[in-house]
Image (tube, rainbow, N blue to C red):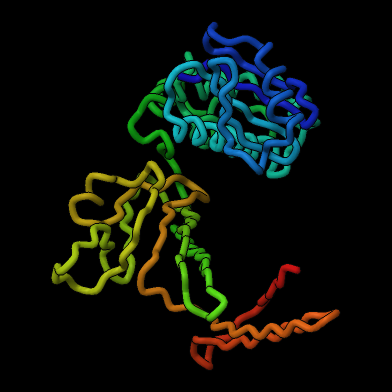
Length: 318
């Protein structure tokens, strides 16, 4: 599994490191600095680098590099998910735009978080709501101090993303569905590729341990069988869920059943490639002359006259 986690600044200097196995050393940071940071590979090459039989998997936050080192054949999706969760945890404690100074001023907190979220190279508890119960440094403060027995059950229990005893005077649930339409047109106006990527954001303020069900207009249709007769549904190519979703029930009857975390979280992400209604139709006209180029764009809205689009930006690369 993961042998070492390092956080480097833009110069390649190690700010924080934690070694979980003894098959790598801090000297590996020199190789990463020379072959990745100094070579300016970030953003142009894949975030996986193999150097001297050691795999470096990394991501960036502002001007800092979060790097995982391993010599085993590890699942890269698991490593990147841990790095993203680590950044999310640090945002909860240090603020959304935490920088190098914030990291250096909270060394004790960060080392404690590293020890709690990983053991011998295996990711452990990465739930912010649980971590804030017994790691009380930084900006995160527990609402009430739990009993030691409840804390142990919370850490090792099946539902570690939500603690017991939550009370609200009024139960509220807020849901935001954010979608992005990606379209590629040819020079003649034909659609070469189009897809919709979306995410469902929720903010729950519920009492106790409620079981919620989330549904769309129709049940999700994952398997597209050719020639099969089925009712119209929301056909999606792939989707990912928060770990609170019961995947067994989703596989059985395509219902999204879950016990939600308290507060804001991302319930699911999805991607759709069929039956996409494009919001706009763009007709370009390019006229090239000796010393200039004239570009005329005609934008036609495909939605109802009762709807209005705001903050529309058209970028023409030159």
